[in-house]
Image (cartoon, rainbow, N blue to C red; front, side, top):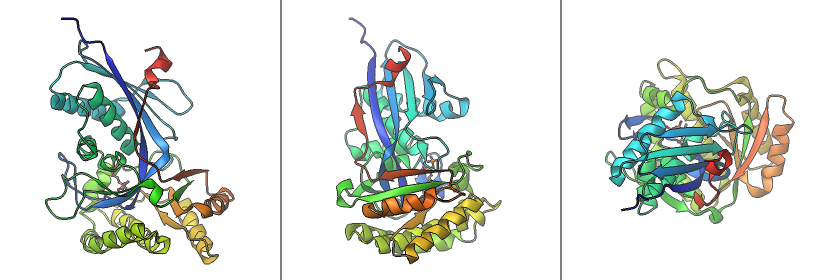
Length: 346
Ligand code: DP6
């Protein structure tokens, strides 16, 4: 029998920004979160990943192209979780053979956008399809993406407004993400004020591990059921005030937990507070804009489409802001025939 030729598959997958955060992990191996999270899938901040699967090949190789640069072998820290995930997908597909992986992000690393959610979502979709066993549906894609180790990747396989896991409760962690509303339900914008683009000092992984050492951890969890309900209702009714107040309280709480963990984690920089004050001042002028902050110093300002120019102009005029990224809710991952490997003569 003639050997099968190599199969190339490419996906473009978006990052997402959480309104209710995933913070604290119940089971690291299975990547089971302590609480459900709700996010908005983004549009412009994406990862593109090409996987070439060759049944005759042994071993995998991983190439990364930094923004504005050319493809280079990825670093050990980058490669390790990718190789582990490829191995798990290979076992699931019941196949042998090796992969060549090329990946890049549309946004600068360290810009306050989690590249692991978009990166592992794109890798999961491209690799499983190249191996001949794509996920049967979005639910299976979400579970597979979660098992990469990046919980937020479980949300990035879906577009619009997304909850992961689908419901609350002790036994819910392994459930997939569900879409609460599609992207065209509500045109929200995410204006990111980058105040420090240096890599963060403490990874989300360590933050999750440490969260339960905070005296605020249990109190936040008790409030979360109510917050999840409010955020779901706010999305359904396109109510920015309701969404914004809860989302902001939730982001501050995450950082309260982080700062009171043992040892404490301070993600904020002086510029973070300056942007939070600028958002309060915009609100006092009648602009419905609200902040959320991931595990880093940069501030995501969420507002309806018509207020985006005003918000980005305010950030651009601030000395504390290095750069401003503008993004919006988006429809989720897409397959493309523009393979990255072609750019390196692969
Ligand atoms: C603060 O474990 O998914 O962004 O893999 O580094 O993206 P990465 O982190 P992950 O934790 C995400 C933490 C968060 C909140 C969130 O996105 O829900």
